[in-house]
Amino acid sequence: MSSKRRVGIAHFLLRTFEMLDTPKLKHLIEWSTCGEMFYIKNAREFANKVQSRFKFISQVLPQYFRHRNFQSFLRQLNMYNFVKKRLKNGWNQFQHKYFKREAKNLLIHVHRRSNGQQSDEEEQTSIFQSLLLDQQDSIKKQQEQLQQIKYLQNDIVLTSSLLYQQSVILQSNFQRLKNVLSFRLNQKLLYQYIEEQKQEKFLFNTFSLLNKSQSDSPKLTQTILTQNHKETDQEPQLFVLS
Image (cartoon, rainbow, N blue to C red; front, side, top):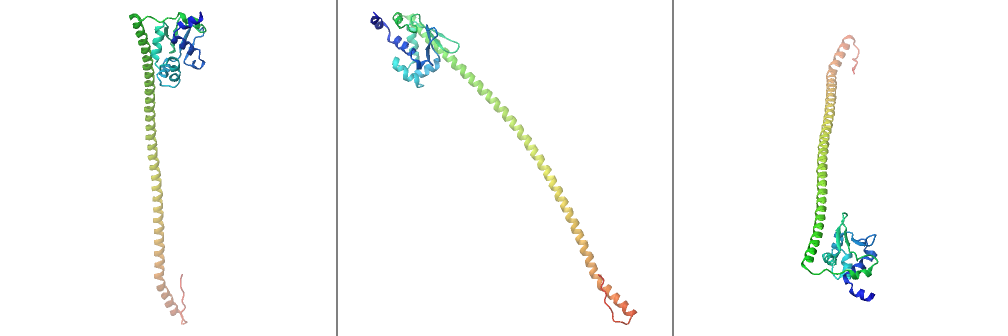
């Protein structure tokens, strides 16, 4: 009895069930707490990995389904009448009344939908809605990134303005300090020049007096000698005035 049921169970359902019972995949796909539904926790990450953009699912999914196409996985779930619901946290929830944890025997009651026109339309609608939601998420993330870029640009502009103002202030202070130092230096040089002029003038006057004193000294000596000779008949005595 059990073998007959197992034969009637679709390979896709068994593989999906097996994947859900694999602990190392819980960060991507996992049963709910009650076990009556399962979640694909990060559809974008799951899809990217199915499409070989990352390592994990690109290596695991081919072992279960022989393909790497996430949309094909969604189509299969839709064809077996799984109800898909998009949660606010971005997870995808899938539910079927006969697809439950630890109830593999119920899989015999999960049948593939007929290939009627209505099923194809529903499948296309489900896929389109999934793609649309993913696109909306992508646009939202891009908008958030653009907003962050704008904030960064505003911060850069503000920082540049503040740096420019600080540069102007520093340049002004530097010029003011330069002027003060130049003025002080000029004052010092002027003072030195005045002192040098005073010293030169003093030295000039001193040398002039000395020269004048030396030029007048012989005359004064001769006068003294003449006067002494007249007063006495003694030998003239030489007095040198210093």
